[in-house]
Amino acid sequence: LTALCLDLSGSMQGSGEKQLLDAMKFLFTPARTREMLVQWSKQDQIMVLPFNDHVLWTASASGDDSEQAGLLARALELHAGGGTDFYTCGARALAAMKPSLDDGQHLAAIVIMTDGKSQGEMATFERAWRADGRRVPVFGVTFGDDADRSQLDALARLTGGRVFDGT
Image (cartoon, rainbow, N blue to C red; front, side):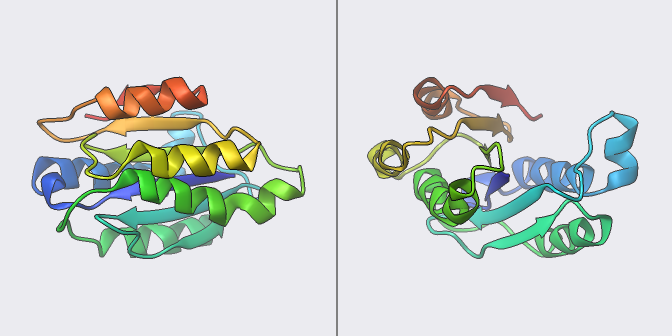
């Protein structure tokens, strides 16, 4: 069970937006992921939550090739604009994951793809994360020319995740 929070804020315009959409093309194109020995299975649950200062929409799919193509098509329609709040996106991802987490059948993770500059408050995510009790790890992936890892590093330390350079 993976939730992907995709930063489509104004600060991602330009190279950050292109890098993010290129990453989506890779993640949701099975022929490309197979080349890297990385691929979703049909049992996987994938959630996509594009955001700027709020979550724009939420979509879910399995690892089925056609369902991945549907997620990719929706992601490619996105354009950057607005503010940034990845903490609220992370909290929304936790809430959306809850029914699947309750069945105990899935390992879960949240991946935040961003330039690393949120105007939101970490407490928004931390309260939801501590209240849930399952301690879902957060992995950050930075994009853009001016990526700032500091906020993502703090989330990774809190949750047991890591931060990666997506450029």
